[in-house]
Length: 326
DNA sequence: CGCTTTTGACCCGCGC
DNA sequence: GCGCGGGTCAAAAGCG
Image (cartoon, rainbow, N blue to C red; front, side):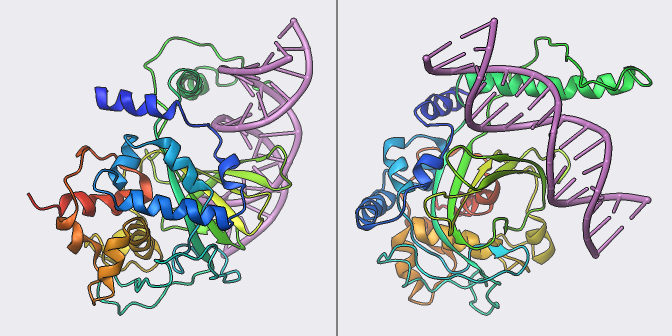
C-alpha cells in the first residue's frame, strides 16, 4: 500500500461513516448556494474528480455537496421499469442545459428508461483508518475461516453459528466509497452491474430500510448500500464501496469503446456524471461535442495519476485520465 | 435447478 | 459490562 493510499484513509477519517446525515437534508435554497459553490470548486483546476476520488480534496467541501442536488435525466434505470421521475431536484445552471445522450457521443442512442434523476454525489474515500479497518479485517478473516471450517467441520456441529476462531491476518483496508443521491421512486436502480442483495437493516430514525448489495461477479467485492432519505422519501441514496474488478456487463455487451452506448444505462450515467461534475465540459457539449473524453486535454494536470477503480466511475474517469494529453 | 431475495441471528465497535 | 447500531451471514423461501 502506497503512502498515497494511506493519506487517502487518513482523509476519510474526517468522514462520517454513515452518509445519511448528509443526504437526509432536503435540498433547498441554501443547498443551491452550496451547490454552486461546489461547482466552482469542481471547475477549479485544483479540484478534480480524481481529487475527490483519491481523497485529496477537502472533504469539508465535499460534505457540502451532499446537501445539494442537481439532476440528470438519464442516470439510472429502474430495475422494474417503475415510474419515471425526471424532475429537477434543485435547479442549477448546468442541469437543464445538458445535451447528453446515452449514445456516448453520437447522440443517436435511445434514451434509457430513466426513472430517476441524478442528484448529487460524493466520495467517501477509503476506510476508517483503524476501527473500520479492523472490523473489516476481522470480518474478512471470518469469511475466509468459514470457508475452511466448512471443509473441516463437515458433519460437525452446524446447529449454532460458529464462534469463529480468530487469528491475525493481513489487514484489509476499507474500500473507498462513493455515494449518489438519486431522485427515484424505485429503490434499486439499474446501473449496469449485477447485484445480489445480502442484507437489509432498519435505519435509525428512518422508516426506510437500508439494503445491502454485493456485486455478483466472482472476485469482485464491490458493495453498495441503498437507502431512502427519511426527510425526502423521493431521494434514494446509493453508496458504492469498493472497486469493480471487471467491466460493467452492460459495457461488455455493448461495445469495447469506453464510452460506447451499452444497452443499459452506464454510459449515460458516466457522461451525465462527468458533465455534471465538469460544467465547463457540459457547456461545450452543446456545441455538438458529446464525448467527454474529447475535452480531457483541456483539463489541468491531474494531481493523482493513480486513479483507483471506483466501480461505476472506473468507466468515467479512466477516460478522463487516459485520454489526457501529455 | 440455479439464482436472488428475505430475514433473523450473529459479530463487532463504540458510547455510556 | 451492557446496550445499541451498523454490517454481514446463511438458511429458507421465492422466482423464472
